[in-house]
Image (cartoon, rainbow over all chains, first blue to last red; front, side, top):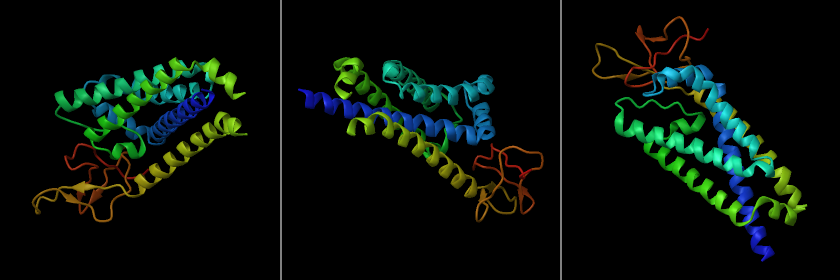
Length: 150
Length: 83
């Protein structure tokens, strides 16, 4: 049984790392090309009025969520935060794909090279991963996991 | 040892990897940016050979063969000379 829990724990840590890589990579890329990112947001349908505010808000929330992943105590809020953020991005892509004529991409780094449909799939994979993470936490609460690790 | 690796070393490596990757890919993107221009004497939108190194903000428009250069084929994102 302990072996199974240990495997769950390793799986959870791997998912945590994937989210840390994704959010830190995306946020840093956005900040490195901040002006471009802001311009892209200004050209984006539905959200152009909030571009200035969103240009700061998105990378900061990504950094905050990746920070939460570093502390076992905040893993659950980190997963809920990731789920909310990824769901917002995915809903936005869905709306742009279905209800907008222009489709500019304001994503960071290499993610911007993805097409909108690939981007949708990419986001959906991370939404599934956050559900898996939440399920793992629910099945083996963090305190229980920590007791086994220390 | 294994626990220590998963608890602290792995997240630290993930952060390091993410930051290095973002710097590497952003630098790479900036160096190989594709630029498009519309020469009235040639049908269609033309691509600037060898790419351009023009940001999307500035004061003087980025030009090739006397034509304004854009970051996209739809010619919606204007490119500018580096300041």
